[in-house]
Amino acid sequence: MENYVKINHLYKTFKKGKDNLLVLNDINFAINEGEFVCIVGGSGCGKSTTLRILVGLDTEYSGEVLVQDVPVSGASRDRGVIFQEPRLFPWLTVEENISYSLGNLSKKEKKEKTREMINLVGLIGFEKAYPKQLSGGMAQRTNIARALANKPRLLLLDEPFSALDAFTKMTMQREICRIREAEKSTMIMVTHDIEEAVYLADRVVMFSSRPGSVKQIVPVNLPHPRNRNSEEFVKIKKIIFDEFFDDDIKRA
Amino acid sequence: MEHILQFLSVKINNKYFLKNMGVKMGIRIKTGMNYFALTGLLIVIWSILEKIEFINPITLPAPETIFFTAVSMLRDGSLEKQIITSIIRVLEGYALASVLGIILGLMLGLSDRLRTRCDLIIQILRPIPALGWIPLAVLWFGIDELSKVFIIFLGGFFVVLISVMDGIRQVDYKLIEVANVLEVPRFRMIMTLIIPAALPSIFTGMRVALASCWTCVVAAELVASSSGIGYMLMNARQFSMSDVVMVGMFSIGITGKIMDFLLRKMENRITKYE
Image 1 (cartoon, one colour):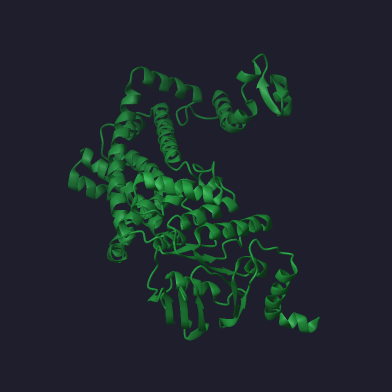
Image 2: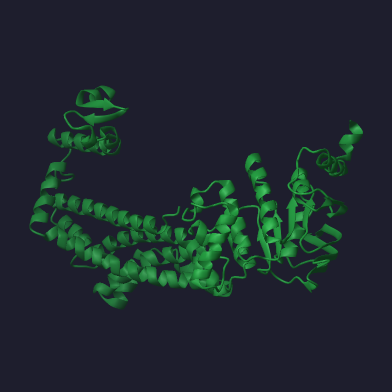
């Protein structure tokens, strides 16, 4: 579907006492079904705020935010979220955490879906582990499995790998690509890692800071799996990098 | 220290074992010493001070006297009887405090509206020490069991109430957001997220409440009772039987410690994921 997600004239202000801080300034863009879009920007540029509005956790804004032409009002299971922190329930095991998102299904169905998810994220053998016993990467995988268990058509990811070490991060990026191939969901990811954005996205939406607005949208027409060191990859990375750090270029 | 240990034992892999015992059966002396050494030393000094008559045996009996008195009291069953009477009172008051505290704590923790309305009366009643209620309790309930159980109940109730309320209000909002995104209905959220998340705080409150209840039972018995360990203490004092007094005090301390230990064990079993 064209324009599966539409954002029209999105404005948001934070009220700080008497002052009003304009956080989002006329955000406009649209995302097609099945696309993977990365929103890139420095910290404080409003990218996470935009995502939270898309999720439905934030309802104070002006403008239109539509998913399948229906305005977003409150959170919904159709819009899965993968937060930056794993946010697992410490008193539940890995498999219990994953099946928490499965609401009214029979026990057998829940067991099957959970097993499918555990296979998908590569956590076989850790079903009965508690979050306390997991490494950062494993906890985040559980988080991902929990979000995917419902097979949401739209997946929103808020810097999901920024708390992981470099190796785990690259592994997880590969995993997300693989999962995306398997599930064919639409994904919107917020990140401050330019290389991550170029590795994963079909299009990269660049946000400028204070107030947040869309600077530019760069398409990434490279086939998967992508080579981080190939010429084309680096070229696109450079375009984005220059857009953000143009003052560095002038100085050099 | 090292020399004493080396004299008494054999050192294997940096641990000390008693000589002439197989390594598997060996006792880790050093660990034991760390735990008991100070108390043991104090007891020995105390005993010596008694022997050289530095302390008046009526003001403070020797540790050996206390020990033998305790043994004879255990033999004729009088000590157990008093301890059990007190324990039963504590359990009654504590159970009441826990049940009411948890129910009300849940209601107030989950409903902002209810909480603002009850806040004033709680803040006024809470600082009143349970023992301050004794005159009123005796007036209302006489010097029967009920007045003592009432005091004990008060000793634990507010502690449980506040810890349940706080436990619920301090559930990590990040987890609540996860539940909101998953469209978890309110009731399921309370049962499967809020209460389990509040459990550590609730358990802490229950342990503190138990200790508080135990303190109250002794004091309540000191005032208005004819049985129980507090009564035994007051009675012995009147006859200047300081050894019995000391036996009573130690019994109180040990029983309190055992009850806390058991509660801790239960807590660890339930929150084994921590």
